[in-house]
Image (tube, rainbow, N blue to C red; front, side, top):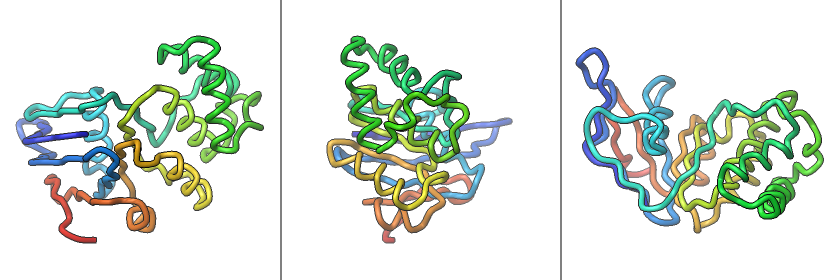
Length: 199
């Protein structure tokens, strides 16, 4: 579960993003909407603990991982990208290899395993980055524009990987993905986050 209350992000003495409240219950999918530059990515990064708001409270009951819109993959093979991430997540070499293969197969990208990750297309990199993020055993998944570089089939495939065992918060400009996938929607309007009463 995720609970945010009374958050404020301040720049030059003025709050440019305010979050009175946001919650995501176990197994729920919550969408963040708003124009580019409104603060959706910053809010996700704050949930992960990468940045700190100037005021307010962020509470995550379980561990979290995040898929960034522009993933930074290592300049090595896809499989080594995953193996290294698995070791950093605390998995043994055997566990890491097994989990890496599991996610490659689950996303149907096992053919990419020996290829240099930085040479892949944007959509391929996005799926590799998702596999890498999921190597960490978590209950909360944060996604920054998860459909930006993916066709509909790949989007549906990614969404199917995140069943109700996971609590998901995702930002999106894709109205169809939000309508299809989100249980609830929050929208940033002129620096204020509010829950949309209905879709």
